[in-house]
Image 1 (cartoon, one colour):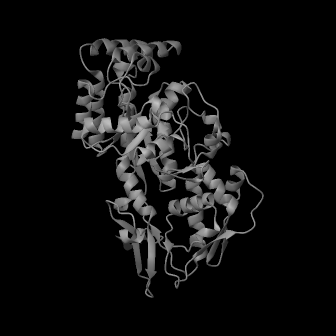
Image 2 (cartoon, rainbow, N blue to C red):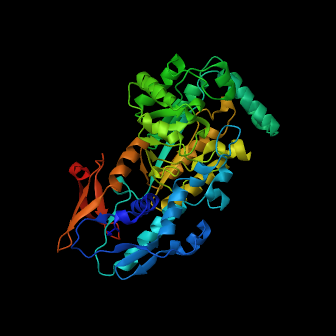
Length: 486
């Protein structure tokens, strides 16, 4: 528990950075003015504007004292800049797909993109609060539901449904350029065997079977526009969600309880009105609410495209991840509120960044061994576990033998088994976002003389919230109190 400084003493960017650290540190604020808890103070004198590596080396300049922790304003602003990808928001650079190149990201520039540095900073703040508490009461929000210490979410982008032989030949050409002749032969044999069948739907059913055996329920991002010859050639819209083949896949997903989100087409990045149109169309097809969005090819304008998503009433976005490498694009292994660095205000969306994607290595780094993809995914999962965080991965279901990936299905099965063996909380993205929004809102109303805690959460969640002691033992249940939002 912690007492926060007056909010009016901070700028909007400083408030965002402070709120983010407190949330990720799992240290709830206390309303009771009469209880003696650790106070968080803002240093009135900042150190010279430190770069990211200096902040990390200096333990983020957190100062510990008897019953207090002091943090400089410049650190709060630095946290905000990293978590908002502010450098990307300010960049005019674009790659051939209209994306901000990863080299524009501060973490990539500092060679820190494989570390969730903001989540690590929050862990250091939590340690400072605990060390400064002395005999004062300390309680932390439990990190995840059901007593779990970290979480995973498996997500899939449905890029290919129709015209699968075209994608097979494109993949054969790619493998040929890499001189992967053995994989070329295996792909051609698998493709010939699949003629007259639907290898995409078969691959999806096998993938869903693998997930069900491990009690995984995944989130799927589905294209929902009208393809043209131009969009097909560009690798953008390649199928109609209403077409029989796509509709059959969507029924399979619904039968397994999967969440379905929108895979925003290329045009949505610039024509924001298309978000609402594509969302409504997908909801008509699935007869289910569509709460999340992820841009196809990750094509977006950071800080701008999110306003179109929010206007279309999406609850969350999961576009923030690197196309050409794996890592933590926003420096977090968690769900965080989006921030518009230019306007200096929240975007109105929760961001659920992914840290691992299958094609980041095979397509951009030229690594064709799926075992190497899985090893990198597991290494990033270890980094998430160390900060009680969330691992989000992207697996494309068209990575199947007939479409040029003969070893991929077994690799995905291995990845699921390895991550599930580490006992995470597993959920769809909307389930995780809802619960994290509730946890983020926890406050302690009162601390009784005997140490009992009266804690509440203004934002309701579908799963119970609890406070725990330093050993992880439950101290108190958190009651829902929507009236506190007023």
